[in-house]
Amino acid sequence: MSKYRAWLLLTAANLFWAGNYVFGKYVITEITPLWITFSRWLLAIFFLFPIAYFLEKPKWQMVKQAWLQLVGMGLLGIIGYNMVLYSALEYTSSTNAALVSALNPAVIVLFSVFLLREKISRLQTSGIVLSLIGAFVLITQGNFGQLLQREYNKGDILMLAAVVIWTLYSIICRRLTIIPPITATAVSALFATLIIAPFAIAQGIDVTKISPLAVTGILYITILPSVFSFVFWNMSVRAIGISQAGIFLNLIPVFTAIISGILGERITGTQVLGGSLVFLGVYLTTGMLDRKINGLIR
Image (cartoon, rainbow, N blue to C red; front, side, top):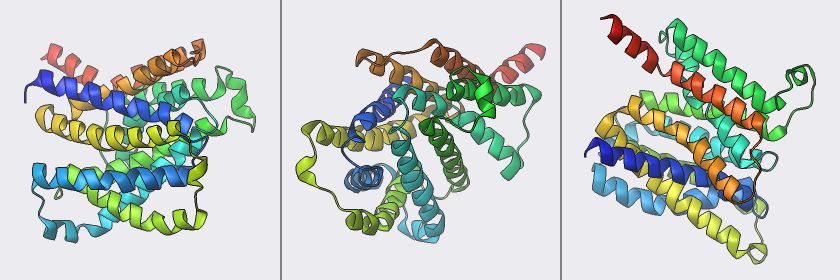
């Protein structure tokens, strides 16, 4: 695959993921986070397993050996992250949720330092600090005096929790190298669906009160963000590497803001400032500027 095709697939993948925030904001008004998560991944596994089989030809004996890590991925990345994300959308805007989620690359690096003993430069450390300042700007709406108060937007705090959950999920993914990525996603989604099914059944759902818009939202969330985005992402990572592909994650808040703006959501100056600080911080955290500087020195 050419790098230009990989860039196109990555752009599409992040556009679909951005739509997850926007559609999730509408669906959450009619369907609980538990049922959104359950129905989304129950449907998705019927697509993911055939794709994994034909694209990756998985060795199921290896999958069996890694069952514990795959269960952990299901609990964190499928159940935990999605439940917290959709709960956050009950209280905050889709744009703010996406901007806070842009902290993911920086927080992954931070956790890697403490949990995996990876080393980072001073410039990367500055990037983490800058990203956190940007997040505080978003959460406090530019009023840092609110940090001393006890009342915050629940949605923004929940998104911070979602970032931490996704970080732990990503660390497990990074260490699970014996299973192909789409296969790992399919199997972890299957485990998560089996775990969450009794709770979804116990909670129940009145399908007669679900509007066509919510049904459309669930189908969108299932097919595009859950299936196509993961497939496009994995194909592109194989073609150009995780470092270059990771930069494209910064498109999610941009696409979310554009879609939300088209649908009538107002974008504030505080969101622009906070988001810009997060983006700049993430850029520094990736180490790309370090590599450019070292290249110039050499």
